[in-house]
Length: 162
Image (tube, rainbow, N blue to C red; front, side, top):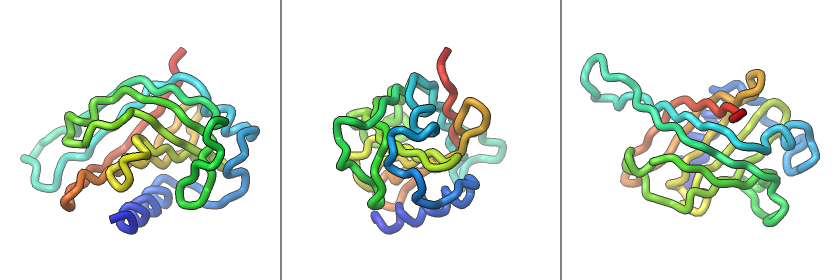
């Protein structure tokens, strides 16, 4: 299951146009890492399921996200790369059948790319986001495994709150 999630993330990164590499990964003092710190609104748009009725509209969840530098858990990593950000979010993912979690997040930046893992302690049931900076926001793709072969995917936008 973890291998499948890793494969899905690799596809997301490629599809989102992210530049894969390790330069600057784990460095809290890069401009991209400092830029991610703050209060955001996260919007997840779920693609209609394969056998949804014709004309089905995408389902949307949105809610606040708070991100700070990850100074308290410098050993935290994801695919062997350090996570530069930590935080919390408030999204009703249980509405889509995802298990309720601690509403924690971990994230990292490199180049123009941003990766965020919602509920990282959920293991393969975590929600993975991979995107790129577009002006002052981050846009990209997300995927989540609900178990027993069911998964969700879609687009996301992370917009700073002013």
